Length: 142
Image 1 (cartoon, rainbow, N blue to C red):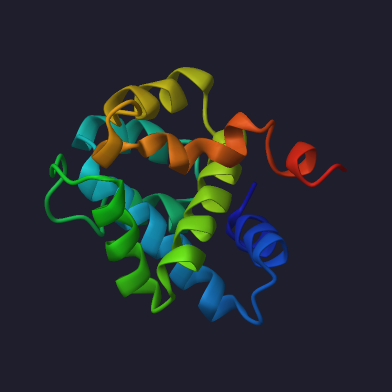
Image 2 (image 1 turned 45 degrees about the horizontal axis):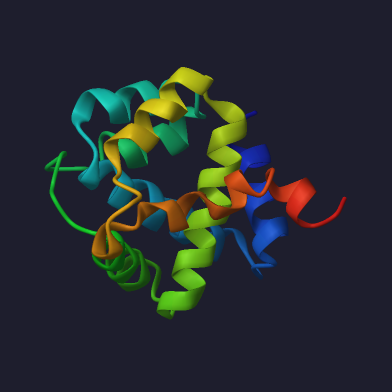
């Protein structure tokens, strides 16, 4: 999948009006995710993504491995994307679901292992709700 296919898929799934809004949603999600996970994990995930997309996980991040919870993740994505928190959380789920279909299962599992899903304030499981529902097509009944 190249950059145009990746962004086009996200734009379609999120029903965003233009490429600018789409790229902003992708950048907000992946750069914030890149801040949260270790540099090596970000590089592993990024390796299978289009060059223009992988940069958000790696090159756009000044400090990997920061400790923050799901709520802070959503707040950061919301701020970068200039969207309300509910939209930002959903956009992140859609971006992560598409990323899931593009990266090796071992790299995606490494991502999940980096993000605690059990604790109330750290409930990163919300990020994977679409993936856990079987992905975009399954969740949409297609």
